[in-house]
Image (tube, rainbow, N blue to C red):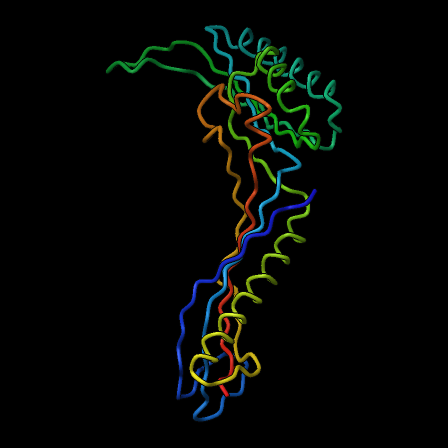
Length: 236
């Protein structure tokens, strides 16, 4: 799938008439530099989702709570398999069990709580809505996290970085030209930031039993790959 490319440059011109210290580089006196920053963004639709869901059961009898939890987990895993998810893309956490008490000054034993989580990497997002519905029907009562991602992160990160570098050079050339100067070879280069951010018109997804309302909301979501580069060029 093709991403839409947006680029911009945030510029911080700086003429240096002294030595600019840089680890591992040889500097020379009276070095004149121009330093600029370039930022670029690439927006692409996510192609996979990492779902972390949980089953929590409570009962005065520990064995009853555990039996109920086991049954719900089994149904949830069956729903995941029915969705065609490979077994290597499904992980379950260790079973957690413990007593629960009232909040009175003298706490009273209320019963026992049993919980377990399942993490699923869903590589076919067309099945997202149906799988979430089936998981809830199976007894899943906690949505711990939903993370949308892209499988070719490195490709888009490299693309964003290269575009940020071009944006920085273009601005350095434009500024130097205005000063009657020209840009020489790069002297220093630093990647200031790179990040992957998912955004959706459906808004944030948090708390228990909440997730993207429909397929349209998911389809409108995008992963933004952003890179910011600072480059110093020789000024000639």
